[in-house]
Image 1: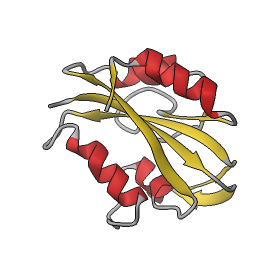
Image 2: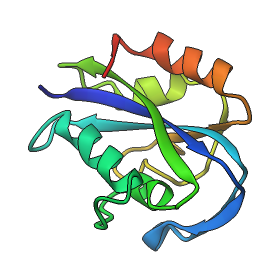
Image 3: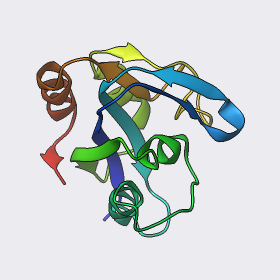
Length: 135
């Protein structure tokens, strides 16, 4: 199955993280939402790949979010998706929080597809409202 997904990620301690060619960012401890497209090979299996990277079962970093997920103080807390719809940019714009500039949106005109919130509740509710179901 293919579609659009958003990961809800916890970063338990602040740190500076290098995001490949996008450069280094100082990230606060808290909650992040990353919206991505799963229209490539494997579809929503990409979400499983992200979870494996966050669990330390994989090393390859292909997307900006992989640099955050590869940090030892991060974990994927939830994933939501909209099957069959290419709505990555629309979903990213609907999520309440502070955008982390220049991340996750290198193939579109959005400023970011990574959003920060110090609290899980409002971010998680916003993500769930932007999608059809939990993955």
